[in-house]
Length: 197
Image (cartoon, rainbow, N blue to C red; front, top):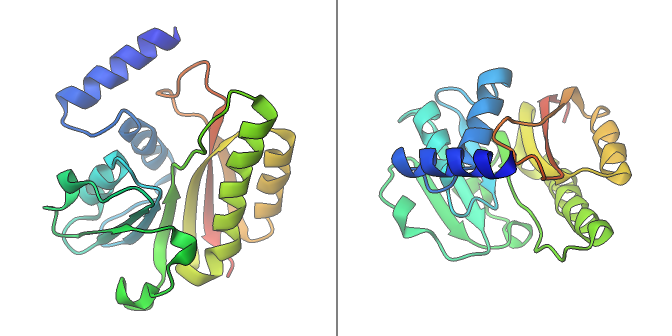
């Protein structure tokens, strides 16, 4: 089953000129939860290679803006898009948010980041959780009140505890597993809406 899923979405992404099959995960999330809308400012942490950027641009339109930050070199395949700003940086080292959007804060923060995996379950889960914890810690810096957060995490007991804690700062928190996720994958997506800054 996992190979069929891989083949279908991989080929579909190629045919539709998207940079990665992960486009369909965000598309499914947005169609279900209505996170991204026209005119929004969106921050994509760990955007590379950029299929989430491509989809976000389609949704937000010309009046919106998407900023992608990744430690990898800027993907030049995305540089021609007008409402996109790509930065090669560790987002934890970046501080000049007001240069990116008027008040320095975004309507939506996205993260499809994953750690370099070792194949050791506990280690990979801990690394995934560490990435998410850093984002949550920094939310007051770059997420607007009533804004939304979408992130990927490798499921574990500690991850579930972190998700429960999110309910203290978001009015709505849902766990979602898109159909395009490979059946063997341990990743889940968390959709948190209405940030109580």
